[in-house]
Amino acid sequence: MIFFENVSYQYPRGPLAIRDVTLEIRKGEFVGVIGHSGAGKTTMAKLAVGLLKPTRGRVLVDGADTAKTPVSELARKVGYVYQNPDMMLFASSILEEVSFALRNLGYPEGEIEERVLKALRAVDLNKPLTASPHALSFGEKHRLAIACVLAVEPDYIILDEPTTGLDYHRCLLLFEVLKKLHQAGRTVIVITHDLDLLARFSTRVIVLERGTVVRDGTPREVLGDIEFLSEHSFIPTHLLMLAKKTRSDELTPEGIARAVAAHLRGLPELDSPAQSQTAGPTP
Image (cartoon, helix red, strand yellow):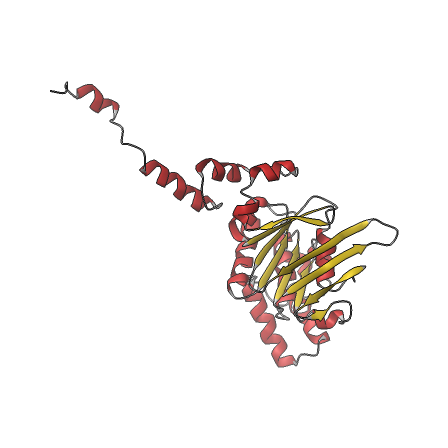
């Protein structure tokens, strides 16, 4: 479990970025974190992986205090994928890139290759191990960055705006990869502005505003509340609006389609125009 206990964080000479936040993220969840620019999303992520230390309060990762635990040790528990994958990629080959952290953490060579191949399979990146990371597409770089984190096999994976620069098809492919990781037992935490993808894939949504948690619940409770979204300057998507109109319990396209079909089945059957014209008077 990742536990924030009365956590506040203030950047040097700046305002409070996180204000007295208390929450827990349990193992096995797929959590979406949303909020406008400056809400504290990235700050919270960096606090969770130990890159920042709380000004007040404490952050625990499976009981380990991030302020007292080396970042290298925390990396075995929780991985962080930056918004821009180019910030993480520097090696001359895919093999060197994915194996870098493993070598730094002292894994034996025989195990390193096994972990590299397993991580690349998990993100569906089928490229030669000798290929340059810098020759990959932006979406492939994102998957490679995720593989670098996965190779260490952390229980928690945090991704900061992973859909930036991707078209919808590639966003969907990326979230399908995250879904597989979640189904395999990983805890996935995604910072994103894409409400539809969270509605479709996440199990929980946290809303940050000015460094505080203003809403925390299931996608249905949070994203299905059109009034709340509007009040907090989020633009409800067409999918979410349709879910409300159809009173769908699910926020996915498939769930909404089922709700529409069920509604139509409940309507009385209407005679076709041809039947109406040929039907004789009722005796």
